[in-house]
Amino acid sequence: MRRVRHVLPAAMANEEILRVARAQAAMRRWPEVVGTMLAEKSFPDRFGRGTVWVAVEGSAWAQELRMMKDKILKRLNEVAGESNLFTDVRFGVRPLPERLADPEPVVEPEDKDIRQMSIREIAERRLAKWKNEGRD
Image 1: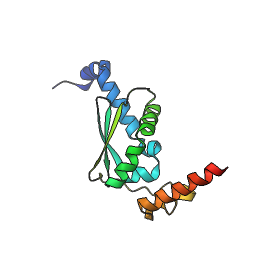
Image 2: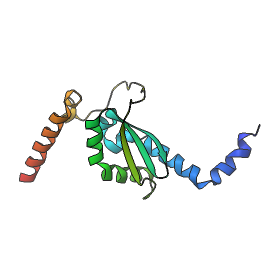
Image 3: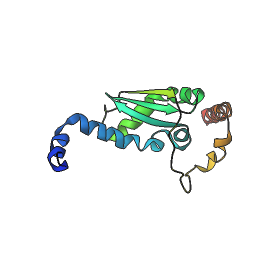
Image 4: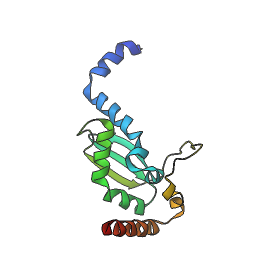
């Protein structure tokens, strides 16, 4: 059996291992990347060859995330501190992993009731907000 002190230097010299470690660190910050509400409906499953696979609670939420794909990629790379670590993101409807309950979830004041809204209600709310912003 080899000791960690003998294996670790070789692993640290392997660029792919370091890339995956940086990707995993960025993926742990998923709520920061997509926002609290979407992070509750999705979870980054795995990373490989520049692609992150994301489990999503339902097809409507997967579509919502697909429309944000470019923004998500940009944000993931910003969080990782590299411009091309993440090159693609794929969304699939799969069961989300069990999560540890947060004692006090962080919710923006205007979105406190958003968890009880349907995706249609959320879309209508956003559309109304965008229309109002266009008048300013």
